[in-house]
Length: 139
Image: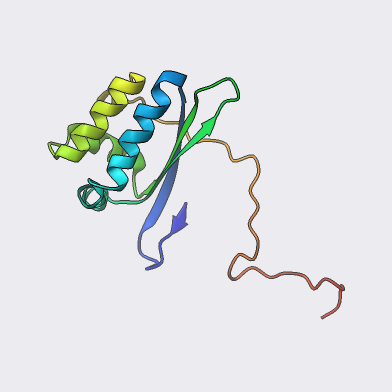
């Protein structure tokens, strides 16, 4: 959990991952390109309305073809945001839910409670407010 810049809202993150078969990589990619271009404003309004502050989607390719879709969400309640996408009448939300069902058989309306992932390693250079020891051991 992390506080937002305003210091008032606590957001949680959710990381989802699933296999993308080789024959679905290009349709999935085209769908995401549509969200990031012609439907971007509609998509942005949806995520703001749902309280999602961050959504990132990656495709980690498999050497043998296909890959793994990785979705990262930040929201006060990411699981609730997914349920609201499933229940929404907004065209972009309906399209998103339909794409997940069509491509991956994932139904957000029946999405099980998501267990928090286990962070195994994290590194970041120069985190603000974090003290760095001098390289020479002095000062």
